[in-house]
Length: 78
View 1: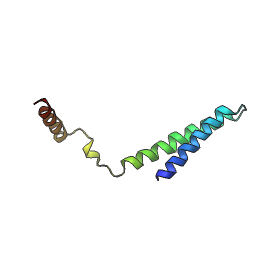
View 2: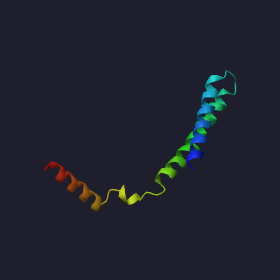
View 3: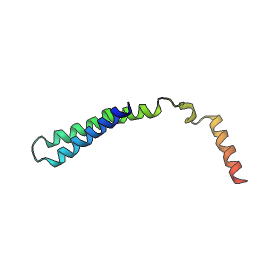
């Protein structure tokens, strides 16, 4: 998965750079394709890859987590 993300990101960057480098009517299609690949494939795959083994309850604001934060702040003050 990691290598697929890297390859797609490089492909996207290559398309965008190619679009800016060439001077033809198709340059906007290259730029648009690169941006579309980046936002529709690379970012979702990267987000999934980074969050797949995480417990989302650790990052939600719940009463227990608020209590933990308050306790840690009290300990830092003293």
